[in-house]
Structures are given as structure tokens and as C-alpha cells.
Length: 140
Image (cartoon, rainbow, N blue to C red; front, side, top):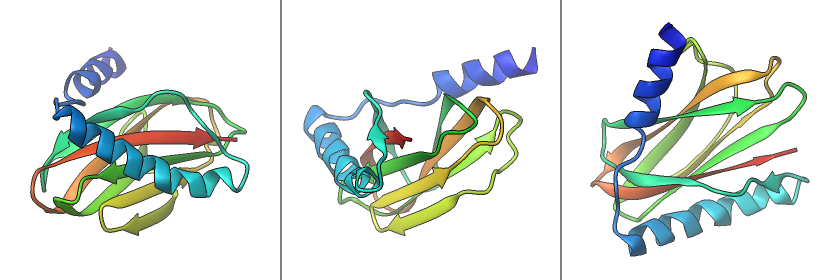
């Protein structure tokens, strides 16, 4: 029962609307960085999450991941964001070990789960003004 309630809270609070131009710009930034993972054989997953955030306000996305695969979650934000971050948690909210990449308004987290199931990806703006963001992910 707790898992279901958590999933509903996560999904209901994940996205906030952003102007179309800002969402497109944020997605382009995320895809630009995600291209680095494709050079290592990662395939970009169709779809993305987008919205707006501000410093001190995290957004959560629940994803189902499979053991044996490797993943990169790549975040891009518009230039109003000065520093962003991506973190990964298991279904109970416990942080998992992941590779971190942070570069101003771009960030990514690489992860290879040891068990299949739901995971939570947290995106947050650490510094700057309210900004649009987009999150994409790659797998292999």
C-alpha cells in the first residue's frame, strides 16, 4: 500500500507546465548531452519529461528499470538555471550508487541496477532562477 501511495504522489507532483519554446530549448540541451552516451552504445529512449523548477524544489519521476541494463538519465535546463543535479533512489527512497555528471544547467546520472523494478529519479535546480527542464534517458 505504501508503494502505491508513493507512486501516486511522485507522478502527481512531477510535472509543471512550461512555455513551449522553453521546453523545446531544455529538451535540446538534454539531447545534446545525451549524445555523449550514444557514442558508447547507449540508445535514446523515446519520450521525455519536462516542466519547470526553481532552486530548492525537486521533481520526481518513477521509472521501471531492468537488471542487466545500464542507464543514463540526462537533464537539461534553460539558461536561467545555473546548476542542476540528477539523483537516483530505489523504490523505498534509499539513494543508490550512480555515476554523476554535472555541468551548470546540464547534469546526468549513470546507473546499472542489480534488481529489476521501480526506481525514482530526482531532478533539481540547485542555483539560479526558475527555469524549464527536460529529462531524457538512454539504455544499453
